Length: 109
Image (tube, rainbow, N blue to C red; front, side):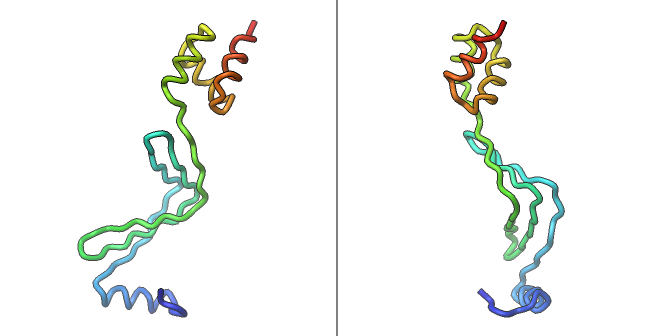
């Protein structure tokens, strides 16, 4: 956008345009989705304020965590005759694989 402008000049230019930029320190950012989460580790967060609107820019290491559907948990719990909590743990261990979770729970002593 602005080639070869050093950060100091960029801040000055932004201030002249009525924009402010600030940095936030954070350990982790979690974005909750309908079917899981996006976790950003070691984020660098910039907040740009312009025309009374705040825009967040986040960069870092992304890790996607998918949620396990409630229907899958209930199915595994019913098939293996265990609690929903045990079924959830088995599904997490099997990375969502229904058959593997049921077999794992069925093979218990």
